[in-house]
Image 1: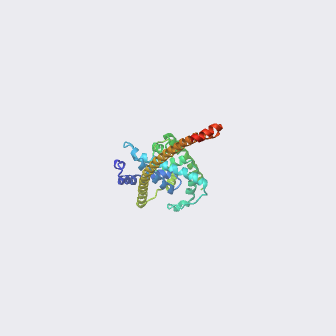
Image 2 (image 1 turned 120 degrees about the horizontal axis):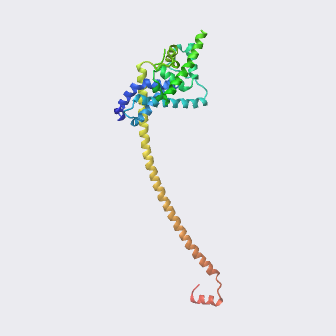
Image 3 (image 1 turned 30 degrees about the vertical axis):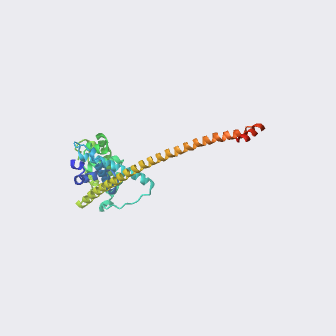
Length: 170
Length: 122
């Protein structure tokens, strides 16, 4: 870390290698697709690199970086909203399209996730998929821990009721 | 299954969690992550190069702007001095012209005109 702060490029590269997967997960919980998550990770690391002199060694680098990446992802989401309001919707081919994507459960769950308020969606993904604790989620998204907890509750209740409906249909 | 923090309101649904994990699955393969690391470092290098170029242009621009300011100041003072000199000369000419006009209009007697002719004063 100190070497990276002294401007040693290889030291920062090692930090990227160590944290990029987790940074991607944070970004992906906020943005709508894989491509935007990649952009947010790149923007986040770039901002972190420029702000390295403001990083205090007694902080946890991961937590500091995740906050920056989350902000980059939120910026992308805001820009996309403005752009989507101006343009006709466009289908983007994803290199990570799952063959089972067409399954009804998954497609309905995806639709339900899209219908969730963005913060609730981020919270449930960060908690249930990535295993972050409520306190960590609060720091990443800049919300109180209690809010993260209640967001998780609402998101789970909503999605579970959807799954319940599907199960009773079968 | 319940959460690590407990509480009935935070009961986890395993089927839901499994589906969420499938939807939000991260890309697999070291090659992908190595490529992403490469792209991140390339962006950092690009941005540093851009900043150093823009920094050089900024310094050159500031020097050019300072030189232009000095030149403009010098030209302004020269122009101002020229205007002042012209105004002063015009003032003198104006007074002299007025005097001669007044002299022309001054009525003189025949005797005085003869006297001026004799003495050589026109």
